[in-house]
Image 1 (cartoon, rainbow, N blue to C red):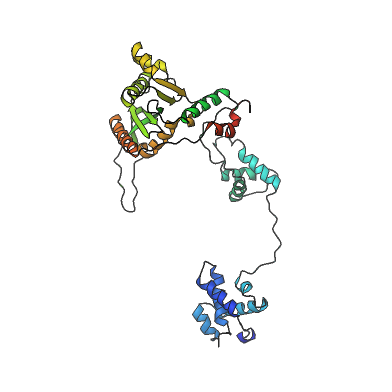
Image 2: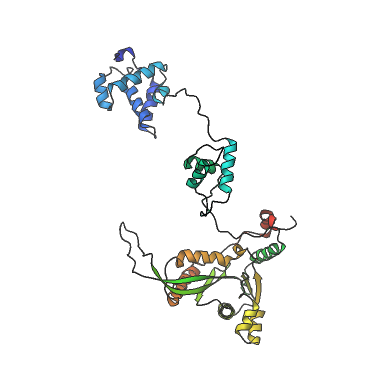
Length: 380
């Protein structure tokens, strides 16, 4: 082995300061830090250098490592950064298997209908079909995933979404009607109230859950007992921060009419008119009042209502649907076995939410709709 004296390491003050800072601060590869420490230990500018056996033992490296670092320092022309950095190899670039044509064919395959017996494409399923397709080299699923990631294409995922029809005048008219209602200022004599309803399944535990503890999650048995279904009615006045939720065994016209009577006579007895926003469900109409009450009472209740229906496939325009989503996450995401318990839990959620007076400020306007949703208008 050549002597270390044949390749002395002499650092400038700037190089030494750079290496000391590199070994004490920041995050760097271990190999880079190790070579920097070797250079500092071999530096003759600060005095006599210890024997290589002493340096190797102190740094936890071999004598061969000391020799190679000193050799590289000399070969790089005393370039500190080139010495401690990763050595660049002059290798010819490897041509990519993925040409533009192959990428286009992969995307087309991922967007096509999946084979029989499969609901959607997965990366491993695409890998199998690529292997059987002429003109495309064999690619593993990770390579296919990188190609699809470039285009933000995710064939293994789907979203449930209410898709409105294109160029539909009826949709546009009802949408603008709802948006104009939401743009009104708050008027206690003419409050704007949104309503929606959802089915809910009453379930009981077949076996008692195991409570959570330190290092142990709550455990519920996958088996449950069905106790029927019910319907949850949700009423929201967005600008007042008020909500009312109530569960009923059914969702008939009689049930809806009873809820409307409570709205007008209990919740808003002093209001001249209640502006009611809701969807087009067959029970949501003035005729339901005549199904439930005498004509005179039904007529009197109807005269205090100003009804605005959201368009079909436009349930996102109903603020009550947003509240039902919040209610589901905060209160209903569990098993509740009977209607009495459910209504008690709903009442508790209602009290806490109304105490916060959390208002809903609707920011999407008619002008926004005419720009962002112009494809819904027939003449744009």
